[in-house]
Length: 544
Image 1 (cartoon, helix red, strand yellow):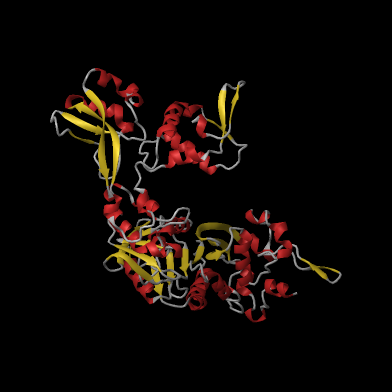
Image 2 (cartoon, rainbow, N blue to C red):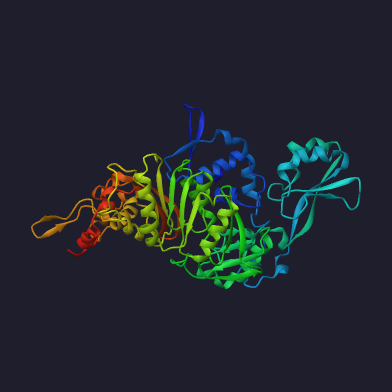
């Protein structure tokens, strides 16, 4: 381990070793090899710490890892990490040929009497050769009273490597240490090992995928297209319970939230049943939107709801917000423009026994807000017995923020509004180019009629001076680059006081971040005269 770390120093005062946290490539490769089946938990912890730390001035106490240093040093010196990986000759293969994955290797093994096999396995557990569909313990063809135990050649090169644990059994003559040749084949490697061996080096591959029922969904980059048939077949062969592998061929349609796909391998329809957060959903994956990677976010929002709360789900899809909310005994108004999503929503409400608490609509989002939501919210405000919270979810990241303008002036000149009504909490999703809060908040501010600049234009003579901008022009970009990654103090004309949180949901693609802004809908926005709303200040300022 001393040889695998770049910086080391010894402090006599504290009588401990401290190591710089920047690891060499040797150490990273060593501890991350998939063929190293046995890795001590403490070593895994250390590896994660090293990968997550970038500053060389950070130090960690590695005294607890000393007992692994000897074996690591020996392993690094002697191992060929490619030994248990697919043959290098398959690199660049576009048509899958399983026969070309055959590889002969020499592995150490011990022959043990049946009477001693349990003791032997206890001693050799961490040294066993563990590869898919390869039994490390097998009968000895030449002697039925003995067993052959295959050992990992990366961990064991000679009897000395196991003598400390296994020496007593060998000394008693109950075991023999030998080497033998075995043949590995396509069936012995995982999908990730095969794809890493085949696909081009130093390029983003096809390791990321989603599983929806019996469908495995990929979103391959263009440079992977020549290998897409092979990629599909490998996943079909290696991932259990999968009968269809598809690849997205275009962006998600903003109207109905579905996309075109191509079949890479397998056969069958796209009707699936999935489970998420205790609910069951049936859907046609080719016609509606479903992303299992959003399950945590769905749960995060639902946990904000209490029994008796109200949820207006403007872009409900098949119900990942609406149905769990109904199960929490909330009152839900769920809407989706896609007729196929609407049908699935109605069916899923019945399946999960919440149809008496979830009302479903098939309307445009603007129309839903200006009719159904407007009418029911006013009733809630006028009900003196209603004392629960009100939430609005708008999960259509491509355009959801644009629907915020439907709330501007929604109750202008409407009678019967109480003096201090319960303001709805809006959870609106969007795509941004950066994780900076100002970008997401600026988008919300613009569509609610607030200024996108905290400081208005300041004039010194005839030259305008720009203080802070939402997106950042070249003139101020360098000054705000460092602060753009932190929480902003920009007020956006007073909107910030209503903001509960800004959350980075996930990175969809380079320069494409899915964000959520949770904000109380200001009463001044709802009562504003929509006919007098001027062009958003951010646009006007850019023209000056």
